[in-house]
Length: 223
Length: 255
Image 1 (tube, rainbow over the protein chains, first blue to last red):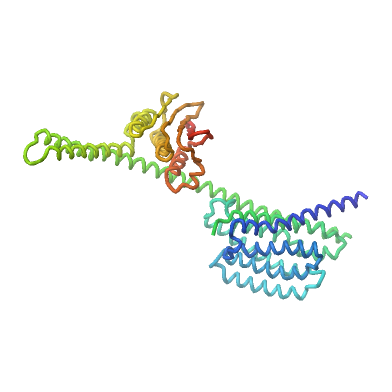
Image 2 (tube, rainbow over the protein chains, first blue to last red):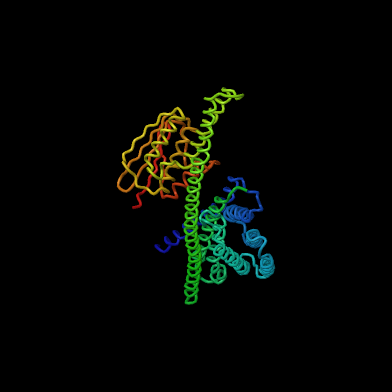
């Protein structure tokens, strides 16, 4: 009986964090609308903010309320995710690293195509791991370039007031912390282990990602 | 079962390592930026200090030039004009000479005022209190304004550079009160408590939010006050009052 109670508590806690994470996904775009910058797509982060909002709404309505299978969405999301993140770094470092980013784009496209081979309905963990790994590599590379610039140029006076710091940190935290989960997701799912115990890592990282995105958007200066 | 426990442990260890590495990198970034920020602030303060010192020296030089040379020449010129007026000989009309004399006298006053504003001559020799008394005396004559002064400190031993910055800040504040706030009453006091000196300035003019104005202001006046006070480690605080404005400049004694 106490074991069941504990299980129920875990589930409740999981759903509290899940709903919070989903709702916070809408916040960055709301802030963008509030600051009248929602359609300024030349800002590197704006496409990703739109994607985050669409993903939150889809997962909330399509997955939780209408109980639609999310595997198709996850596969489409992976493509949109890699494109928006690539766009973020491309615009951020423009006109530098064009060749390197083009190479990464090629790698991401190849891995995305490969992921279709492993994609199975109701079990898309392998496809997800294939998509996330090169994306994590891109985030690591982009973060490294940005931190190197920060150390070399010393142009940013106060990091806390710099929106890019929040965006770079958000990606860095999310992709690095969730990497083990996505890589091992298939093993965990197919074992007798309780998947929600591990999925909480993704929920918490998503929550942090979205909070940081909201702060970053809030700190953005007028166009 | 053993494999599952192993998998679980492995997962949490790898996730913890990732989290730890992320936090470490972020911490290094923040600390580096903080250190750079402090260094840049120090550099900018040194630069600002040097700029203010250069400005003070230049003001002093221009004031001395104006006083010693231009004023001297104008005085000599006025003396000649006065003599010509008294003699009233030849074709030069007396009225014309009197006009020239009045114009010269006004120009002389202007030059003296400019010289005084550039660098009050008393500041270096007689100190801040006497200079402020002289300054308030002058502005109460120029503008129709009532200025009450209270000095609870007999003498202030401050370096000339520090006195100069304080004088300029107080001058800027009072000028703003008269010109932009339409004040007709100003009260000023200097007091001391332990190791701090307080300069209080109040007026009955239009109220304004100093810090908000410092953010929005296009003019240099308010920004100048902030820079000058920051240069000598003094702080300006605005107190909420029903009518007018109340400011306090606090200077920590650096002995």
